[in-house]
Length: 285
Picture 1 (cartoon, rainbow, N blue to C red):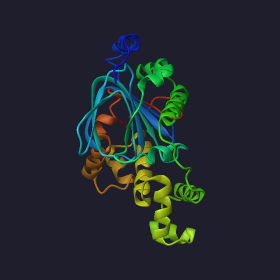
Picture 2 (picture 1 turned 120 degrees about the vertical axis):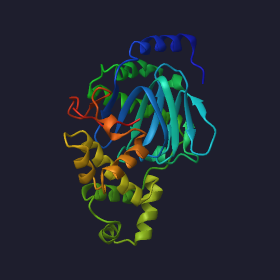
Picture 3 (picture 1 turned 45 degrees about the horizontal axis):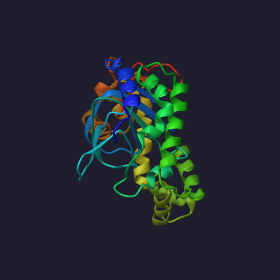
């Protein structure tokens, strides 16, 4: 996609002034989060949220699936658990991460293989001012939450329709969120279904297996721990990792960055639902 002269030039001028700013992460509880950066790049990563990637100044960035040629784009949606790499170095990028609890998640998870859809960046132009505020640290968490929902609404408008999730599956999601300590076998007993029947129901509605969803809940818990003042060793132990090395490897595979970088406020600023920056934020690109 090629930006128009007026829109592209204007957006580049706006974003060049913010090139030295920190990355930003705006966390909206279990609904999702927005991550902004001028230096976002990662090797192959696989993560549970669906993702909407937008270039703030309409410049293209490079996006590639695990087995496929790189794509030059300025707007793309990615289905959950799609392994990919990203190189947006020098591009002001916004990464909107949509969690399974969000009402629109099932639309993103219904994307046909390979789980990637290029969008029309110009259709988001009414949000450009808000995008620049997110990049420049001018946005409050309430502003970020509003922009998050508006961006998802526009993305969904451009995506193929999807059937609504099964109410029984949604009830199962609520049960898992309320009692995350339940094993898969215990969940089967609680719902009066066989393990296989429950897994099929859940996978069809959410686009991931129950085991993967449990992994996401663990990942979501990790977000809160990373935003606490606990040491990385304590975070690893509390989140259920065997040791700090396993934790670091897993974090790198999920996010493409080390947890120590992610907690350095010199590089990353995080606003949570409380509205104030965390001292030691978690990174997501």
